[in-house]
Length: 175
Image (tube, rainbow, N blue to C red; front, top):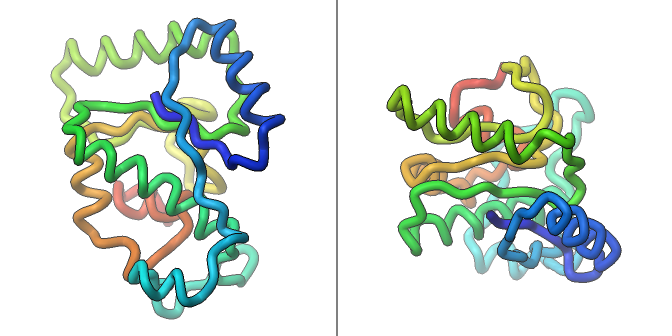
């Protein structure tokens, strides 16, 4: 279980660590990429380029520094999944809020997935269990090794979207 947290947001980190301790969930704290600290030269050195012609359908804007940092934070987790050969991971952002039944519901979902032999790449772990027409944010998801391969195999840094748009596009769940 990976928890993404900006180093300068110690208040969110402390709140999440306390909450996760109460829930009995052990995590690997993953330092978020601070988009505010990135400059154009760094982005070019990483091979980052925006998806040509992309603008958010609601705001009409291209990616913000915050969105670039957020995407790179998730991207780093996907790389760890492949590097370590992790069969599945849970990725959480530090602003997620848990329902009291979160842990037991997640365990049940994963047991059901295993029982039916479902071939899966990504399961959203935040929000209601629905298929949204439009994705506004990603707070948490469970990713399989094959899902990590799929996400990284598309070489997303050369045609970057925000991660809340990229994930649904990659799994055919976006308008």
